[in-house]
Image (cartoon, rainbow, N blue to C red):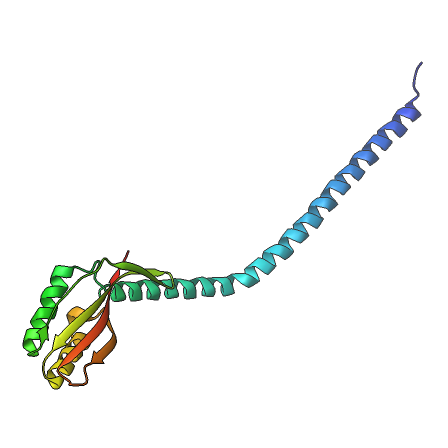
Length: 175
């Protein structure tokens, strides 16, 4: 069977039209996808300056927090060394003319404040002497640089005024 020239022309035209239709469908799908991507890109570019500012603010906050952490770390000793603090307390007691009757250092306990864990030693300091000397002793513990990480919890003064028990917590930073 011989196919006529007319059938070949029709068949060629149908193939060309089918190819053109296929190309149009692919092109229009790509154009729609391109438009969608351009829209998403525009939205992302609109958010970019705000996100950049937010990132910068967060980096500044982080730098500030790290600086604050480093500054505050220096106020807290790495560990509470009983020998050092014992020497300091006896030295201060001598300066204030009070008698520190005894000094027992219990094992440090962990205390978590927020995200930071501290090593805490709770001391009971029985002192005797003149009332003004006892108050001087307490004041030095509260203000001396060596006791910057110390919190005076309570003071119990004997009615006679010559004896007192001072309860303090000494904090050490646990890295």
